[in-house]
Length: 453
Picture 1 (spheres, rainbow, N blue to C red):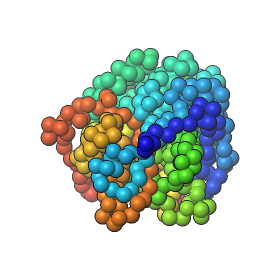
Picture 2: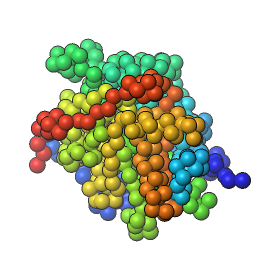
Picture 3: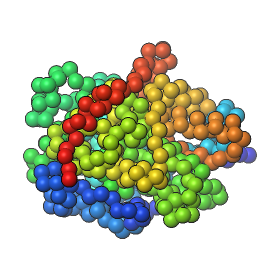
Picture 4: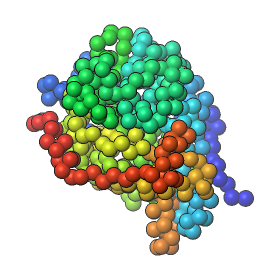
């Protein structure tokens, strides 16, 4: 009998997160204050985040303990399952071995609560009553709503308008857990009103929604802001995925030749690959291939500039050194809302700049074709974001078929697509659009990058 599922016991769940800052061959560029251009100090971030998270943001400790209260919530769904995609391998007639770590078994259906639970816990411990946030496809918003319910916090979510319209059941999920969800840009903040004055019909962007959430947070003493990707502490919390996976693969005497995941802000994929890239940095696995897959409609890593930029439209956030399309970039309304972000996690950008990882862009139609192929063989209907990684996984498996090489491919499966049926319906009916973003639009957005010496 060929084994398909590999699972750790609850006792084997990691009790620490892994911090890549301890092992980078070159230090990460500092976060800069938006007004002074100087490196931010902990007190500069205190209006937004609890001090525990601020310390994690800059810590160089290799491992950071997961609080027992966070572990208690994690055990609702963790450890998650590592699958061998044998039916997909057979359908592709490939000698490659395909494994995927499935994060869709969490209550919100994605990897996002790995950090949402931790952030809610640290805010609650500091006496915070409310959290504001943004969400693209709704996975992060629903995850923070779930976490807020776990720790008794009030949650307000600004959801990118086009996703708010495309994915109404994500809003219902948030409301079921007690959160409030409104479309962004909204008339309720100065940032939202400014955007609407310029373009009343805008489809919205994550940068706009971040501005609204940050603005509201800094105006209330009992409120903090919560971010679902990009920042170091968010990627840190997600490394429980990679730590579990590494332990499982060691148990079955496997190690990946190729690791593939989708990236918008970068937290889901970094959570899987960071414990593995440590081996590449230290020279134990120098040939390990790590592929970050993004949408061709929002090609941050493949067509952006490596530059300091704001994380939001209004310039309320600190400046991050990252590959960026410009904070005023408004992506087209592709269904992979979680990947429609103008920037990328500084850690991933730094690793790309150092040549330790690579990037690839995929078009929407090809990703849904891959998602349907995956569903018809593995059974799981994947999120549109995850379909980008599935597309690249299938392509790499086909290369193995053509070359006759038996490589081991590890896929970061970030979540299910059960509330994305409208997108699948459009694809199956032949009505799904594809987008190729014109270079002149990208160049126009890049002209607004902040000038940093």
